[in-house]
Image 1 (cartoon, rainbow, N blue to C red):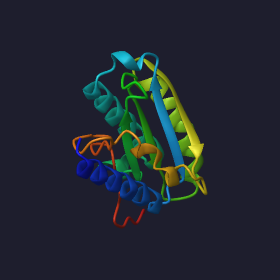
Image 2: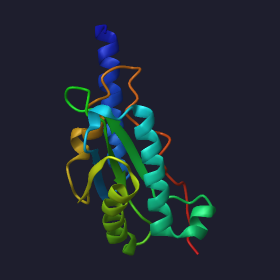
Image 3: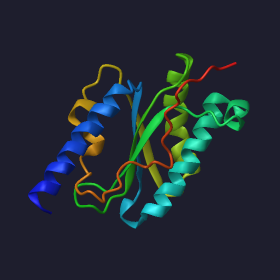
Length: 163
């Protein structure tokens, strides 16, 4: 990678971290597999889609789900320090404070129950955390072709009014 490309990657990482922080997500989660070495990116994408669809339905209910309303979130696929341990990280919020505990509890259970080969889903409070300041989920964005942000599972509403 040229020095110019490396600078561009650094700028994208910095701006990605700032953008993530500006979303003010309530929770941060990490979902892992028993053996992330045998999970392909496409398997991880399918698992993440199923996981977040089930989480949306459980927390928001079927009616809002059918109206294509989802929990606000950013989702990242990572492969770990040695690039062989596939897992996901996510930042997520709800629309009402009762969603906070529902998301936390439901996410941890849903990953284990719905995903073959799942190890665990650890959810942490992100309110006031400095995790996003370090650009944590942008650390594996190490080239202009890197695909760390899992856009298939991200959702940032512009304006939602719940009934």
